[in-house]
Length: 411
Ligand SMILES: *Cc1c(COP(=O)(O)O)cnc(C)c1O
Image (cartoon, rainbow, N blue to C red; front, side, top):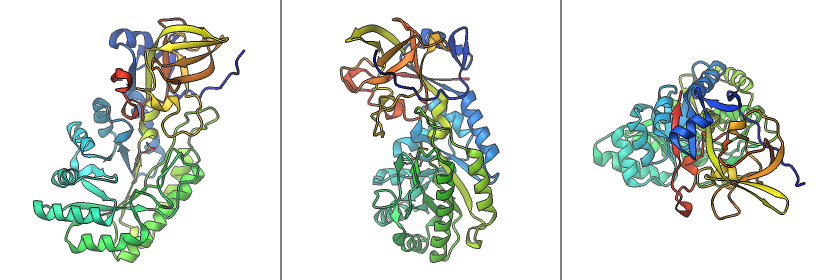
């Protein structure tokens, strides 16, 4: 017997019906029969529910932005645009997708190091807010604005002098390619104001994928204090402060869902005692995976079942070319199992220990390592949960000539 490895927790909202996983009223077998496999399925209902619950817990005046790099699928993006207060983009390509999906340019902000002149030009022409990442990027944006005869809307992205503790990906604290160090912020804002551009405020993003409410609360307090300190130094109030995000989701065994009630309570308190210089400032959170990650699943069909040296392998028609993160090769140090199920034997008791692999000819293509599952056969369907964020968009679809999986938004 090989050693059993646990799987991550299956997110709330996934029901079984007659032994089938059901999403948006359709069973996994129906979905695959109609749309083929492999297939990403995203649930409108779960997306809406997630944002409603978040708003119910957060301060009323707080804006919620969607960082679309987590999932830029057009129909999902259009649905999200109707639910959030702003869309955060990170490239000219995302700008095009956001506008096509119906986003209002006035509610888009554009962050990311290495914005090209043509991307800055498109953004300035469209009227989106650009989060300026360096003094030289500021000069380029001002120059493009004056050549186009348009007053650019510019916020300054700050590399905070702290990080989000316990976050999966640190984006602040220490030397970073993101934003500018705090001592560069005031002179850059002065330059924006002197050039008669529209200074929108600050963007301060300290990290991603945190599951500890305390750490997020501490970071939000530090972020507000930093914004106040910088505003005092500049001598002007920012219209807008993007507080970053960092809200994580439970992917792995032992992960506990984030306590958003605790965060909301603390943030309400913070916003009720703002320093005078921030008293008219609009605050926003920018979230990616927290909004969309749990609302998506990846379905892939078993094409072979084989034994090797006493271990059982279920070989699927999917793999890391669609779900790189589940294989442990997207920003994780130690590989652990995502939440996984046999979708057409949903809720059935575990009967055997199996490894679920993709169809790629590389040992990296491991979707689930030695987990306990009901006995599955060729033709059965594997569901990988937490596939709504950094799935299709963050996987090497062309690897081995496989191509992209279809994506589907259901009710
Ligand atoms: C990637 C990114 C996000 C989204 O991160 P999540 O972990 O998906 O919430 C938000 N803001 C910025 C600046 C980012 O780079």
